[in-house]
Length: 67
Image (cartoon, rainbow, N blue to C red; front, side, top):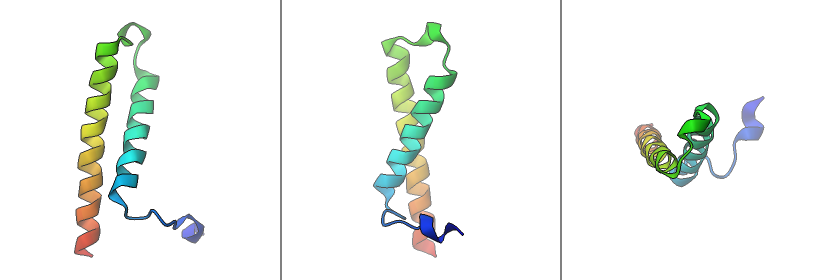
């Protein structure tokens, strides 16, 4: 059933980084209260989302190399 989702970017760490980063930023933007939506908090959100995305995409890449 999921064979159709096997695309050419599978295993690409830059693609994984972008997907996780965009998802994290969107999720935080949705749950962030309106009072906290200042440039400083949004920049902090970008840096935290990037750090989590970098960690998770590098972790996935290492797991795929071992297999």
